[in-house]
Amino acid sequence: MKKSAILAPALVFAMALSASAQAVDKNKDNTETVKITVSGSWDMDFVFRSRELADALGLQQDDTTSIEANAAVRLDIDLTEKVSVVMSFANERLDNGFVNGTLGTSGSGSDGLDVVIWDLAVKMQEVLDPAITVQLGTQNDFMFDIRGKGSPLFFAPGQSTAMVTKVNGADTGGNSDYMQPSGLVGWYNREAAHIAVALLPAIIEGGRAGNDEAAYAATLYYDLDSVGKGSRLGVILCASSLPDLVAGAGGATSSIITIGGGASLKGLGGMEGLEVFAEFYFQSGDIGTSGDAGGSAFNLGGHYDLQGDSAPWVELQFTIMSGDDNPADTDFDSFINYENVNDLLIIENQLFGFNWNTNMTTIKISGGMSFTAGGGAKNNISLSGVLGICKTSEDVGAAPNDTDKLGTEFDVKLTYWFSKAVSFDVNLGFLSGSDVLELVTLPSEDSASVFTVGMTGKF
Image 1 (spheres, rainbow, N blue to C red):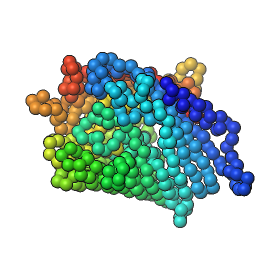
Image 2 (image 1 turned 120 degrees about the vertical axis):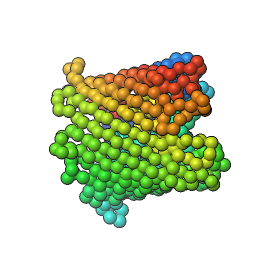
Image 3 (image 1 turned 90 degrees about the vertical axis):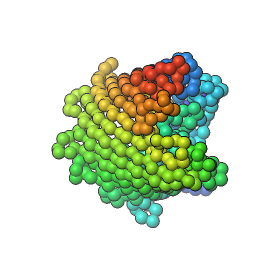
Image 4 (image 1 turned 60 degrees about the horizontal axis):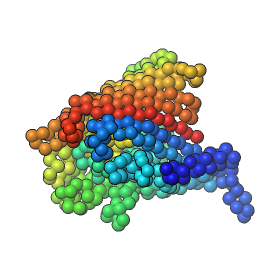
């Protein structure tokens, strides 16, 4: 508990600083002032994992409970009108997955509450041209996100686990961890066109340059407000350098090219509240010295916000991510990614579940609505649910017990907004019919559950 004691004074200090001053003198020899904006967030959860889920995650063969938390304090320091510094301090909720059989976020002796410098970057606006912005340093928020929902299927390295862990399914056995992509990103924004170039040579720092996991990407968004407000097209070209992607590669570096794109179209046919979205990705390149990459992914769906005081909504989504049909050879057909999809609490969620992130075919049906209760603000309670019908794109496990039955999952989430800054939530997740789970549990079970109660806040 000593490490949590480190975090609490930092949060108190930051809030006091935010309340007391927004302009701070740099020194007596410089009459210019520095504007400092302080913000922050926290997220705490009580988590129950059933024996089957805990066993599959390598925790223990029994039901488990834990308190898991993360917090961050961010300083936005405006040096001039065009130059600013971003600095944040945070703990890593995921810290190399599991430590001595327990989650890195739970129990004394874990380092999931160590406070680290999380963001450190310089941002410069109007560089050579009023439309150009450049940021040098950490790039934790950079992503390619067609829908703008914060859950990219392919590229969000600051929100994802390493590409090298995505062999044919789940990140388990110590692979779950956050990364701090660092490098240079430049943006060019002119009317409807938004271009970005990201040079990220140190997504994972591995010592010498050849041991670093790196990515170099160019993205383009083009606004289509003529179709409907908020509509846009997007494309990405990404070159990834990955050391030790698969054991059969002999330790050599793999180089993979990903080409992808998609669209989010809103208000089609004059239907206010309707969104139709799609995205696709194809991969090629060299795996080590003798293998070839051949991953692919496709996502198609629709979202509709119905009219009414309760703001009801429904969504249907179909996703295919390729798997590797022969993990024993050096070819690599799994779709490898820096994803941040956490729709399903057990199968997809990187905090509470398997973080299954490739080799998957899924149909997800979700919906929700809001209510007003307790004399609070309008619609201060939201209730949502999702049904996921999942299978692996390629069989996993050894014959004759290989299978593609990942399972059917049903989740329910209830959120109560106590204020604009603080909310409480309850999550329930149930997985059934999972032959994949049955392969890795003793005694064999094909169902699992998870339950969380948490609080989030921001300032």
